[in-house]
Image 1 (cartoon, helix red, strand yellow):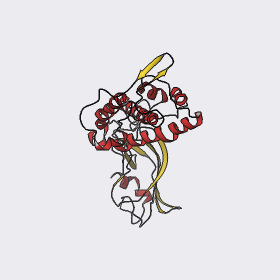
Image 2: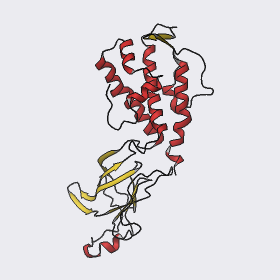
Image 3: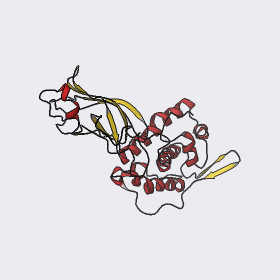
Image 4: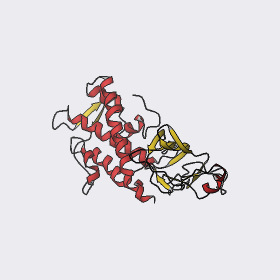
Length: 275
């Protein structure tokens, strides 16, 4: 079972969540083909867990580099909707898809430390003097700002009619931005990794219910018998946001412990907690 680079969790993390049982043992026990099991993990279980963690917290917990297009809003600030921003390598305002109105020449990163005290981007090398920059990148809050100093920088290259706001073009995404955003492996919290692994493990457990005999509460791995049947469980009601991962099958003891960790820790990382 191979890992995709910079996944929120690795296969080994999922195996640890499953009390150290290698995933290949599940594949063999379920009598599924290797390609079928790996496809379920890589194409279904892991992507679903990753998407949930990132959507629920409103953060990107893996580093992504891509070009995105936005519609101008006639304001000095343009929210990008992704957090955190690590760098912006290209930013252009277009009148038409092939016609550039203005290309920004120098971006300055600001707010480069998140509310946990983690460095999320390289500070502007000329800080605290931002006068040479015609674009400010608010890395923590995911905002691009056209600074007041741009008026002085553009005196020799004045664009008639531009009020130094993000130009709006009707029915057109006219702002082109190439950026890197998200946390990398070194800055990703351990609780995010473990929560993603636990959600993957819950989906693996659920797959056992579909093939094992009803009422069976244990199975042998080598000379050791694993029993994960009904028993102690977390108290209280599972929050609605996590209902899709709620599990009441044969292995509910382990499942409740896995989900209990997620529901106790993942809410701490929702974006509203950081602002």
